[in-house]
Image 1 (spheres, rainbow, N blue to C red):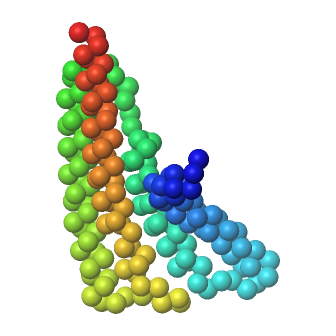
Image 2 (image 1 turned 135 degrees about the vertical axis):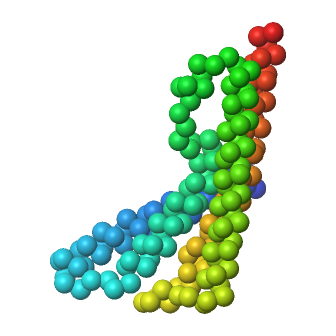
Length: 167
Protein backbone atom coordinates (compact mmCIF):
# COMPACT_ATOMS: atom_id res chain seq x y z
CA UNK A 1 0.00 0.00 0.00
CA UNK A 2 1.49 3.35 -0.95
CA UNK A 3 1.73 6.40 1.30
CA UNK A 4 -1.12 8.25 -0.44
CA UNK A 5 -3.55 5.43 0.39
CA UNK A 6 -2.34 5.34 4.00
CA UNK A 7 -2.95 9.06 4.36
CA UNK A 8 -6.45 8.75 2.86
CA UNK A 9 -7.27 5.85 5.20
CA UNK A 10 -6.01 7.86 8.18
CA UNK A 11 -8.05 10.91 7.17
CA UNK A 12 -11.11 8.72 6.62
CA UNK A 13 -10.72 7.29 10.11
CA UNK A 14 -9.59 10.48 11.82
CA UNK A 15 -12.65 10.44 14.07
CA UNK A 16 -11.73 6.97 15.34
CA UNK A 17 -8.13 8.09 15.95
CA UNK A 18 -9.27 11.21 17.84
CA UNK A 19 -11.76 9.21 19.93
CA UNK A 20 -9.07 6.61 20.68
CA UNK A 21 -6.56 9.24 21.78
CA UNK A 22 -9.20 10.93 23.95
CA UNK A 23 -10.13 7.58 25.51
CA UNK A 24 -6.50 6.67 26.20
CA UNK A 25 -5.95 10.12 27.72
CA UNK A 26 -9.07 9.79 29.87
CA UNK A 27 -8.12 6.35 31.20
CA UNK A 28 -4.48 7.30 31.82
CA UNK A 29 -5.25 10.58 33.57
CA UNK A 30 -8.04 9.04 35.66
CA UNK A 31 -5.71 6.24 36.80
CA UNK A 32 -2.95 8.74 37.56
CA UNK A 33 -5.47 10.93 39.39
CA UNK A 34 -6.47 8.06 41.67
CA UNK A 35 -2.81 7.26 42.40
CA UNK A 36 -2.00 10.89 43.08
CA UNK A 37 -5.06 11.48 45.26
CA UNK A 38 -4.96 8.33 47.39
CA UNK A 39 -1.33 7.26 47.07
CA UNK A 40 0.51 10.56 47.22
CA UNK A 41 -2.21 12.74 48.79
CA UNK A 42 -1.58 15.28 45.98
CA UNK A 43 -4.73 15.34 43.78
CA UNK A 44 -4.75 16.90 40.34
CA UNK A 45 -6.99 19.93 40.74
CA UNK A 46 -7.49 20.22 36.98
CA UNK A 47 -8.39 16.58 36.33
CA UNK A 48 -12.16 17.05 36.20
CA UNK A 49 -11.87 19.66 33.45
CA UNK A 50 -9.73 17.43 31.23
CA UNK A 51 -12.03 14.46 31.92
CA UNK A 52 -15.02 16.55 30.81
CA UNK A 53 -13.23 17.51 27.62
CA UNK A 54 -12.25 13.89 26.90
CA UNK A 55 -15.74 12.53 27.58
CA UNK A 56 -17.51 15.07 25.38
CA UNK A 57 -15.08 14.45 22.53
CA UNK A 58 -15.23 10.65 22.91
CA UNK A 59 -19.03 10.62 22.79
CA UNK A 60 -19.49 12.93 19.82
CA UNK A 61 -16.49 11.93 17.73
CA UNK A 62 -17.19 8.21 18.22
CA UNK A 63 -20.88 8.79 17.41
CA UNK A 64 -19.86 10.14 14.01
CA UNK A 65 -17.74 7.03 13.44
CA UNK A 66 -20.62 4.79 14.54
CA UNK A 67 -22.95 6.42 12.02
CA UNK A 68 -20.36 6.08 9.26
CA UNK A 69 -19.67 2.40 9.95
CA UNK A 70 -23.28 1.48 10.80
CA UNK A 71 -22.33 0.36 14.31
CA UNK A 72 -24.88 2.37 16.24
CA UNK A 73 -27.35 0.46 18.40
CA UNK A 74 -30.34 -0.83 16.47
CA UNK A 75 -33.07 -3.32 17.23
CA UNK A 76 -33.79 -4.87 13.87
CA UNK A 77 -35.65 -8.00 15.00
CA UNK A 78 -39.12 -6.46 14.58
CA UNK A 79 -38.34 -4.82 11.23
CA UNK A 80 -36.86 -8.08 9.89
CA UNK A 81 -40.23 -9.83 10.38
CA UNK A 82 -41.83 -7.65 7.69
CA UNK A 83 -41.65 -8.25 3.95
CA UNK A 84 -38.69 -6.64 2.19
CA UNK A 85 -40.74 -3.83 0.61
CA UNK A 86 -42.18 -2.82 3.99
CA UNK A 87 -38.67 -2.98 5.48
CA UNK A 88 -37.59 -0.47 2.87
CA UNK A 89 -40.42 1.91 3.84
CA UNK A 90 -39.62 1.52 7.55
CA UNK A 91 -35.94 2.21 6.86
CA UNK A 92 -36.89 5.42 5.05
CA UNK A 93 -39.15 6.52 7.94
CA UNK A 94 -36.41 5.78 10.47
CA UNK A 95 -33.91 7.68 8.34
CA UNK A 96 -36.22 10.70 8.24
CA UNK A 97 -36.70 10.67 12.02
CA UNK A 98 -32.96 10.34 12.62
CA UNK A 99 -32.24 13.10 10.10
CA UNK A 100 -34.69 15.51 11.76
CA UNK A 101 -33.42 14.74 15.28
CA UNK A 102 -29.82 15.25 14.17
CA UNK A 103 -30.78 18.47 12.36
CA UNK A 104 -32.42 19.76 15.54
CA UNK A 105 -29.34 18.81 17.57
CA UNK A 106 -27.13 20.58 15.02
CA UNK A 107 -29.10 23.83 15.24
CA UNK A 108 -29.22 23.70 19.05
CA UNK A 109 -25.51 22.89 19.36
CA UNK A 110 -24.56 25.88 17.20
CA UNK A 111 -26.56 28.12 19.52
CA UNK A 112 -24.91 26.52 22.53
CA UNK A 113 -21.38 27.02 21.17
CA UNK A 114 -22.25 30.57 20.06
CA UNK A 115 -23.38 31.33 23.62
CA UNK A 116 -20.02 30.15 24.99
CA UNK A 117 -18.19 32.22 22.38
CA UNK A 118 -20.14 35.37 23.23
CA UNK A 119 -19.67 34.91 26.98
CA UNK A 120 -16.04 33.83 26.61
CA UNK A 121 -16.65 31.34 29.39
CA UNK A 122 -13.68 29.15 30.36
CA UNK A 123 -13.00 26.36 32.83
CA UNK A 124 -11.87 27.44 36.28
CA UNK A 125 -8.46 25.79 36.60
CA UNK A 126 -7.02 25.53 33.08
CA UNK A 127 -8.99 28.35 31.45
CA UNK A 128 -10.00 26.10 28.55
CA UNK A 129 -12.74 27.84 26.55
CA UNK A 130 -16.00 25.90 26.78
CA UNK A 131 -16.49 26.69 23.11
CA UNK A 132 -13.43 24.50 22.41
CA UNK A 133 -14.76 21.65 24.55
CA UNK A 134 -18.27 21.73 23.06
CA UNK A 135 -17.26 22.95 19.60
CA UNK A 136 -16.96 19.35 18.48
CA UNK A 137 -20.72 18.85 18.78
CA UNK A 138 -21.90 20.68 15.62
CA UNK A 139 -18.95 19.31 13.65
CA UNK A 140 -19.71 15.77 14.77
CA UNK A 141 -23.45 16.11 14.20
CA UNK A 142 -22.80 17.32 10.65
CA UNK A 143 -20.57 14.29 10.17
CA UNK A 144 -23.34 12.05 11.56
CA UNK A 145 -25.91 13.50 9.13
CA UNK A 146 -23.66 13.02 6.13
CA UNK A 147 -22.65 9.52 7.22
CA UNK A 148 -26.21 8.50 7.98
CA UNK A 149 -27.52 9.73 4.65
CA UNK A 150 -24.78 7.82 2.84
CA UNK A 151 -25.26 4.63 4.92
CA UNK A 152 -29.04 4.76 4.51
CA UNK A 153 -28.72 5.24 0.77
CA UNK A 154 -26.39 2.22 0.58
CA UNK A 155 -28.78 0.12 2.69
CA UNK A 156 -31.84 1.07 0.64
CA UNK A 157 -29.93 0.39 -2.56
CA UNK A 158 -28.88 -3.03 -1.21
CA UNK A 159 -32.47 -3.91 -0.27
CA UNK A 160 -33.62 -2.75 -3.71
CA UNK A 161 -31.03 -5.03 -5.35
CA UNK A 162 -32.34 -7.97 -3.26
CA UNK A 163 -35.92 -7.24 -4.33
CA UNK A 164 -34.87 -7.14 -8.00
CA UNK A 165 -33.05 -10.49 -7.69
CA UNK A 166 -36.08 -12.14 -6.04
CA UNK A 167 -38.49 -10.90 -8.69
